[in-house]
Image (tube, rainbow, N blue to C red):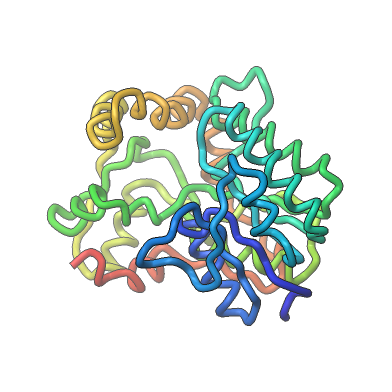
Length: 293
């Protein structure tokens, strides 16, 4: 069902935003993808805008009826400033509703995981903004397998090595399912809720490997990478200090297993979003088999 007017999609040149813009178009909507700079693979109807440039955001939002809002994970003051800029622009454009896509859980202080506290801060801003809004958040993305280092390990060695214990159950989801949920919420005018998007089952690391093996047509094993090694690998790839920041969430899961279960292992209740059917691990892997050849 077409929504009433164009949808402004934030971070449209990233994996998550690109999926939202693509799926919106596939479902017959006009999606305006917000990007910082133009490249050879810009989404259709892309507009230039910077979350730290209010004037560019105002120009990008003009004429839009709805928004799927997300900002890069970073320090809380930066995320708060960028969401504030976005909300101001959306208000000036008379946007009618917002879906906020978060990267994971929201937890207030004294939670020790900075990204969860930052999520709580920006979620509160959106809920207090006066816009009809809904929240979408994932368990954990299967799309992590598509990152270059992980994809190479799966393709060449048949190993997936996230920094999570094999006995931790995860109801793995994917970027396309979360994007679809965001668009369906707009289509159904379903606001006010907090929607944890999960896969149809919660699996251990070994069970994940079994389903990936079936989908990819090749044997895959699960190996939990030690967190210290994970930090070093991230520092090498992304620069000093990045490993500690990214590993912080995984250390939190290790230290608070009950929280890990609440954030990662819960399966979305059937019927929570009418018409939404989550993709299985095997089906996701089968669709992406060429990436791992």
